[in-house]
Length: 132
Figure 1: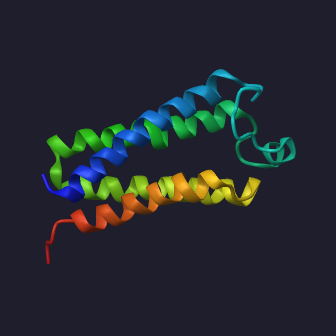
Figure 2: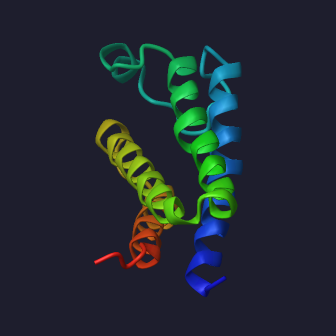
C-alpha cells in the first residue's frame, strides 16, 4: 500500500471515530447543553436542522458511517476507494464551511476540519485510477 493510501486510511479512520462520537453526542443531548461548539439558538431555529439530534444524525451518517464504508471499500472494492475518499472530503469540507458561515471561524476549523477535508480530497485525487 502506498504512502498516500496509508494516509487516506488514517484520515478516514480518524473521521470515523470523531464523526461517530460527535454525532452520537449531538443525538443523545437534545438540549445541546454538553455540545462543545454550540450554534446560537437563533441559527438553529432558522436552519434546516431545527434541533441538535437532526444535525447529529447527519454528522453520524455522513462523517462517521460513510468514512467506515470508505475504509472497508479499500479491501473489497479498491477502485472505488479513491472516489469514496473524495466524497468524504467534500462532505467534511462543505459541513465545515457551513459551520463557519453560521458560527464564525475558529481555530478548530483552521487546524483540524478544513485540513482533513481538503487532505482527503487531494489524497483521493492522487489515488484515482488512471483509466484514460
